[in-house]
Length: 613
Ligand code: BES
Ligand code: ZN
Image (tube, rainbow, N blue to C red; front, side):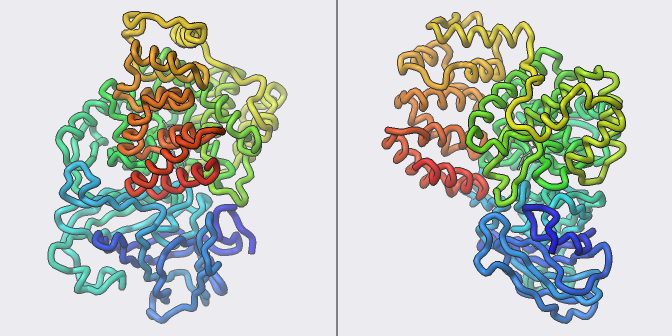
């Protein structure tokens, strides 16, 4: 037994799965999916063969040709809190196996929304979030990004709903008897009012990019390869179509910088407010939080980021989460190049500055756990959701920016294009990146300490805070606030959300209650429609013990489930001593709000509450 990934039971001596064929019967009444999966292996295998699973109810594993049962076991009996359970099947010269199983209502990847939790209040909704290691709670698989699979999926859903996937849509049609391969009875599969939506994914993807959503969906077309999907609410669809009107321009910029767009379509799905991330780069169908629709086009930055993953992350993938910076750091660099091309240098510099501040903050967060201030990490025994931070994003960005400064932009652009063309559709690690860097930029290691950057802790001395007129002005105005000065509203009238975000980030962690009140009286930050701004302000209010805003905090924690907002607000409430009232308040709000959070967000908030209360 030789693991290939600290987050998977997959064994390096076993063949990898190359294709999965799924039949999924969605039972909204019980929040479960009755399923079957045909796994095809790269080569026939005899002996114990291991897959990952979490909270799956496995009823049978069968020889696909003869439909005779194959012996299997689930280990450990009480599931590992991080890894789940290994499903071990005894094979004899098999290259295909059929697994019959059902998902649990508690599946960590799935959020089941009741009609009351949706916009239209009429129909239920369900969607996946498989990154980092949640695909195993939807179907058994070698749930490591070292594996790349193609797949086909038949989704059997109620006729009044529709489905999207991070895959090619083949069609919508009536169910056919015998096609579900024992996922459920044919009488159920072909029952009254059911329809099948069929998809194929012809490009091999790591399991964490598996994605679907089922609900009452509508769409608007905004470009030759882009539709925006969301719940069928005209107001939401129209606002999203306006916000993301510039998507095709960004795809073209991406192609100019990084090479051909390989995924054919670039559709966007705007999810309900409980979506736990800002965006998720599911191939062909990026998932987005509705909070990015701000009406001022800044939501395009998140789209630029997820689009950039089409090259860095989805084409070239980190082999394990230890090398997560290869996904997020390179993507953050690519995102800012796209932003610079479509929104100008000032905007890009502002983003770099916001990121710099977040990096400095996360270095502080990990001061007792410096492992996670490295680019190349050791995540053995660690839940990736628990150590999620801006370090891989911003330190990774800084590393690439440093190389760009060393060799100049034209040479760096050529390097990146070459890197992508060389490793596309492969899963790689930090050493492969470094070897390629040294081979293509001879002598680079004499100018940049590659070991310090990738294996060292903290911020390397040759990292750099950005500079521009606007950036410098905002930081100096934040410094003025510390000595009691605030500019008049008209001087900041042209500030957008990102300017405010940067300003608030540069204020002290806590101030006098009177200063919080004065800040809000002048700039109305607690009423901001931009959650980035509102949450940054509320965080300051909580840290300053300004209880006037606690009802607004409660409202915010109950209307959105994006972890980027939940984490800092709950932490601000419970971190530190002498905060008994805040701790009781946080626990009450969580107990009332948690059924509306995605299971991943529930787990992350619970971990914060356990750690600090
Ligand atoms: N792939 C990430 C989201 C993710 C990371 C999900 C790790 C699960 C585990 C996505 O591309 C991302 O980085 N989203 C950011 C967007 C931002 C950087 C523009 C987010 O959600 O905040
Ligand atoms: Zn990302």
